[in-house]
Image (tube, rainbow, N blue to C red; front, side):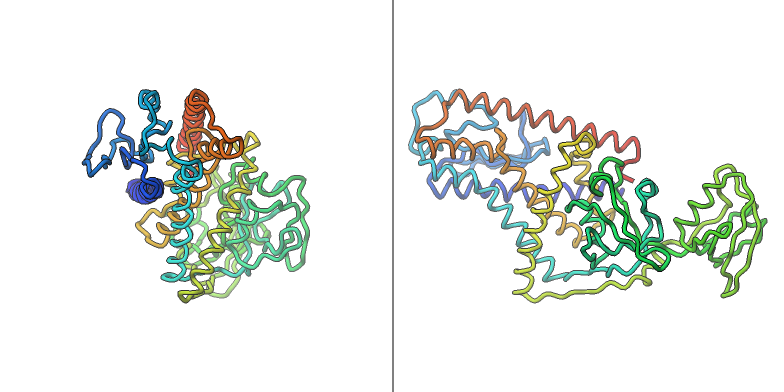
Length: 442
């Protein structure tokens, strides 16, 4: 059910964005009196689910939910309609229009996606405001980061000497800035951890998706009947403060210390109604005792978020800067794709679907839709044939040289671009299926 809800949110989000993107091309083309033969949501390979001709344009919905398209007369696009291109150019065709008009037509979808991303972010800030968690708490650290000097229980204070103000920035900044020095508060004193490569690359290389998380008290919710925990006398409400004298107090630390001692005698220091009790027991072969911690949701009240409200004008300004920061950070993060581990993180629709909430959450839906709109704009601007940016590249060449690229060059470039994009799609799907089978989305 969770996968279905995420999938439906992704489908709705992309449908909205694809229609608006193609509408940008359509409106620009019609403004310059260029004929649009088709306007489709999804691909109509072989047949369509719905179609209706209104005026000169066939409007429809395809059966294959991979984007959408507008077919503009007199243009070499993914339809590869070379027969039409062999005929004499007509006044209503794309190829008959001045280069600057064709450039605006090709940029129409990108411009709309940029505007939509900015407007949605502004709307989200106006309606829901913003909640931030001050960076005042110690964190759980993924065990794979311990070899680099970080430890669970650290409070991360600074990256490269720059103070981190909110908990959300701890992970985001790790990816979007070249973090080489991490200042932590450990056991009451500051320590500077110098890394041999940037933190973001470490996270990519190690495949770490959630490097830092909040720490929740190790309070027992229930005891398994007949378990070692019951035999030792552990009770509901006990908080495990230490394992063999090593301070824990939090769920992840306690679990880790116990699992490091399979089939071993251990001494648990328990806080029971304000009194310390030391209990000896023995772990099983997996380092377990037979108890369950209280759910983290019961302790969310310990973490006080600050709520920021925005007026109409403030939401517009803040929405613009949020959109700009989102694009900038996404572009910066693409540097990791040059590495083998970075390429393995390329994802398909399955990855995009995973960013949505498991229940229908309109705040998360609209924030993700704004993000995807901006990413769609940037990706389409890349100078790759078959994308809008490829057409823009050839149009700029024409405007500089004073003559268009030969039709054969455009046709071959289109084939190369489509082949490249299909290869990228196969890589992305392969990565996602691998993550599904290995639990990489967990």
